[in-house]
Amino acid sequence: MIIILRQNAPTGELEAMLNVESAQYDIFRGSDRTLVSVFGDTSGIDSGRIMRLDGVVSVSNASEPYKLCSRKNHSDDTAVKIGDIKIGAGGFAVIAGPCSVESRKQILSAANAVKANGADILRGGAFKPRTSPYGFQGLGAEALEYLGEAKKQTGLPLISEAMGVRELELFEDVDIIQIGARSMQNYELLTEVGKLNKPVLLKRGTACTIKELLLSAEYIAKSGNGNIILCERGIRGFDDCTRAVLDISAIPVLHEKTHLPVVVDPSHAAGNAKYVQSLALAAVAAGADGLMLEVHENPKAALSDAMQAITPEHLGEICKKVNAIRPYIK
Ligand code: PEP
Ligand code: MN
Image 1 (cartoon, rainbow, N blue to C red):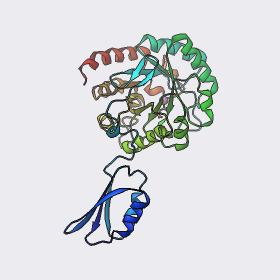
Image 2 (spheres, rainbow, N blue to C red):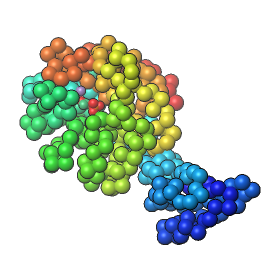
Image 3 (cartoon, protein in one colour):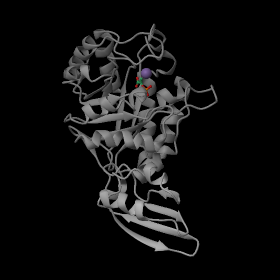
Image 4 (tube, helix red, strand yellow):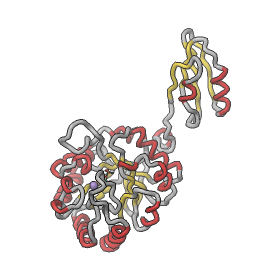
């Protein structure tokens, strides 16, 4: 942490504050400014309180506030493992399935179809965060039972979204807990999934910065769970030609700032099946460690996100192209 004060500003109050935090610091008195360099772990020091002190001009953090997730403290890539599947550190996985589990028949059939077309992990929403309270809200616990059956039949591991702390106990068969974009800043939920012994896929909120995403991941890590997969799924822009703006830059930026794997969901960014393949390939080219794609065998009949659902055949085509370009990346 670097603190700049006006020339000849008193440093007594600042030093007292730093001493309370047992911080190590050096003071340099220059001709027009005084500079205080604080080193070591400064995460407990509130820069706002320092800014209020007489004579303080600026406070900047030299170290990241997300120390567990930062690449600075962990230079090797983290691989999140689900059985034989590895995401990150060279491992890549395709997560595919419907937006929502709509019936037993639908998810069993979809599970076989996505497996046949290259998926490694099955997705399916049981508890759905819908913008409208009148939209299909998901089958809840019943959907998780059907997902469990689909896992038994196909051997595919499962990912499904938890929206609240109370429903977590129902997720025993689920291999990866998804925290949706709308819940990225539900700190109670982040803390609870941090106590679980299973991977968490954390989606970026549509109006959240990369720093906020990493601080949300830090909540999970701080609770004890380091098996975190970050997911870029598009942020809000001004153009309505697509549902969101896929932030491709987030992929290399996150790889620079954190050791955690980064998966991309082109489906919710595009909002339209026509654009999903282009975004998926762009994400792979930019270094994504995996893809999450919404697939429906009969998109016209999908109960949620019908417009963006690709068919299993389209998934197969995307997987073929992904496999063709991956050897050239990195
Ligand atoms: C989803 O994956 O079905 C979903 C609701 O995504 P997001 O949280 O990114 O909107
Ligand atoms: Mn969806």
